Image 1 (cartoon, one colour):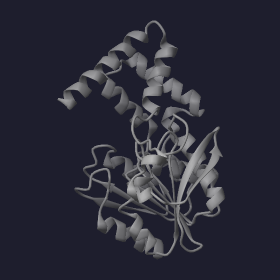
Image 2 (image 1 turned 180 degrees about the vertical axis):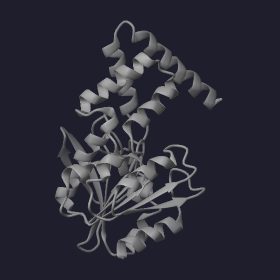
Image 3 (image 1 turned 60 degrees about the vertical axis):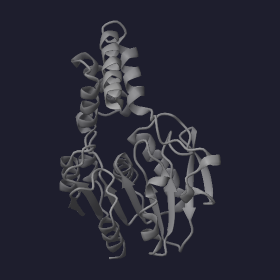
Length: 280
């Protein structure tokens, strides 16, 4: 029943946007962008935090007109920064955290724009990268670990900001091409060609970049530090081919294929491979 309701809702929204594209194209594109970029899940409240986040030191910073919330598990002077994905929050690292703590490192995790305890409503790779930059400047991590869009934001961040602190990156199930993401969204809502064109134009203007050029595979060519990528061959959220594109253009990175782990990539073997990479 939930699937049927979701199907009807998405198609109804798409139909409305298609109609609006003939009368108010700019407004239709703006609404479509907001639906694309404003998360509906992943927010947290301080009075009702998941157990793993309770009694963990918090610190917030001003970032891009909003505040960024971070959590810290204190260790030695080496710091690892964790960057979650879409409609998630820091609690997604619950299973990996104990393995990372075995390294003795200080672990810092941030909540994305519009997620967890961080402020804002709009979420995109560029805005997320600005949050990462704020955290990196303060904590000076040697390692970034990012999942899904968080992984894409890590790639965008290092390719554009080129942090001198970072020595390694771990990317889990990250998408590559913005054009592919938009195409999936257009298909989900059954948007017409007019809406697709208007939506791509909106993104191009917002990011000051042609859609075809906004690609993590292209950005990864600028990254010199070692990377370790994981992607499941049966990932039904971000296609395996996206990970292959990134790995093919990142000269100093290796891609590890998994099977049966889906998009989350929660698995003890994956965690141990991450630790081996960090300690090598």
